[in-house]
Image (cartoon, rainbow, N blue to C red; front, side, top):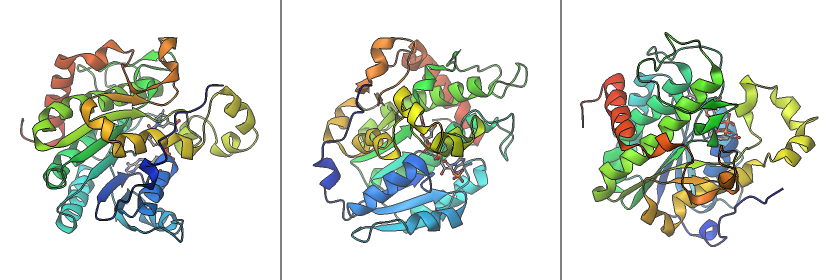
Length: 318
Ligand SMILES: NC(=O)c1ccc[n+]([C@@H]2O[C@H](COP(=O)([O-])OP(=O)(O)OC[C@H]3O[C@@H](n4cnc5c(N)ncnc54)[C@H](OP(=O)(O)O)[C@@H]3O)[C@@H](O)[C@H]2O)c1
């Protein structure tokens, strides 16, 4: 099995005192490890999560030698009102933000809708983060040079046989038959296109934006497809042999994208841990990697997604 890409140790030893980061879905999986590492390095970290009691449990896991501070703030990405309330509270308390990690996500969920009537996966994974990013831009600009790291997936290319594409005529699966993997692929392609388009818009403001694939990571994300306890116990050795990695390994791409000075030269790019792509040559990943999905490079699709997303979340056109 190829070995996962790991961050240079000096990045993970860098003093982040005085820096503020926002991590969505910070109570679990990759988000949790990201929060704990940034706090260990001295940063103030806003742990955004939909169940604050779980955020508090996560905060309690910070190592005794963590020099930073973790603040738990409620955020439900499946509610635009919650996104607005969160952004208002966080920007009032932290006028300068140095990094936003748009990490929270759901995968292969049963058919459903967010509070505002969007298909669950597009609404949570993309639209909620889209609005959040726009509302935090003034604080990110004050914190410049700053970063936006959007968690996508290699499944933006192909998810269990479904090729990633954006169906502008039926974003919410109103006319086509709902398929949980197709909806996940659409939402994760939207993540890649969001970072790509955002990068151009905010380049002059000192903000770098990229998307990442963290690898196939042992987290709770699997829960709509397989019981988590099965993944974590009986199947674990087999899944490891098949390429599943641990949360610490799965957090490396996020941390690199957030902290490496090399990333500034690649704003708009996609950074990938080991993955599963149509083009097998891409499976080794790359920091950055040219996505094998041609739509991920289509400026017209990225611009249209930006326009449509703005309309859907109630923002004026750019
Ligand atoms: N694990 C993998 O193999 C893998 C592969 C490719 C990409 N990714 C991406 O990595 C990211 C992190 O996932 P993970 O693997 O760490 O999974 P995870 O352990 O399930 O974490 C997902 C986080 O998102 C939160 N979340 C879900 N819906 C939300 C909502 N409506 N509002 C706010 N937070 C919400 C979850 O909160 P709760 O705890 O309350 O549910 C949890 O904190 C996701 O974007 C995922 O698509 C993961």
